[in-house]
Amino acid sequence: MADDLMLTLTGSDWLGVVLAVVAATFLGFLWFTPLFGKRWAREMGMDTSDRPSPRRMALSMVLFIFGNLLMAYVLWHEIHGWIPTLWAEQLGIATGDVENSSVWMYASLAALFNWLGFMLPLQLGRVAWENRSWTLVAINAGFDIVRLFAMAYIVAALSGQV
Image 1: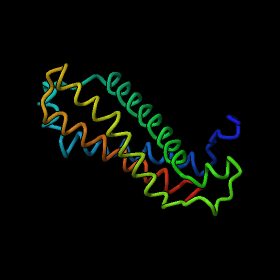
Image 2: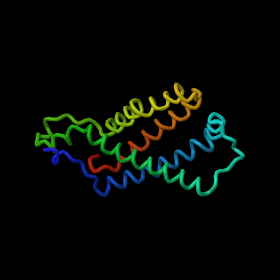
Image 3: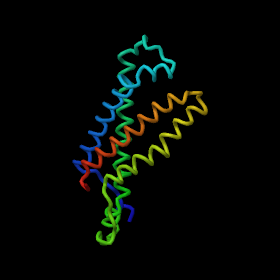
Image 4: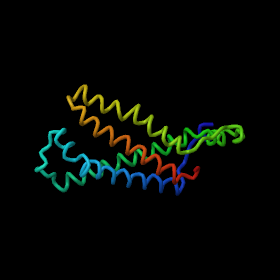
């Protein structure tokens, strides 16, 4: 039965995941450069006149993109795991017997609960244990929730189940 419940990504699903990564990367650029870049750097205690080496910057971008890829992939699973008609199909239940709300609602719930349960507590820990400012937490947590919602909506829009 466990094999029957495995979700596999199809071509349009992978396209959604990849486009979500591109969007999240672009949002990160906007968020941490023109919108909040100077304030974020100040809160991090960074000297903005010091430029990282091209090698260090490339490594940072690769890690950021990889993290976004993991996030988009998990969001795809989260969104699809919440859709009752998909469970019904996998379990052989008539889909007419299962209420299915908009996939946008499931995308929103996946984004919100992942942020609330995982991202926000990590940011709060930075205040508690790293003496980071509430301003830094607001900047980072704000980016996290905007990124999660954008990624979830893109993944949902390109999903084969919409």
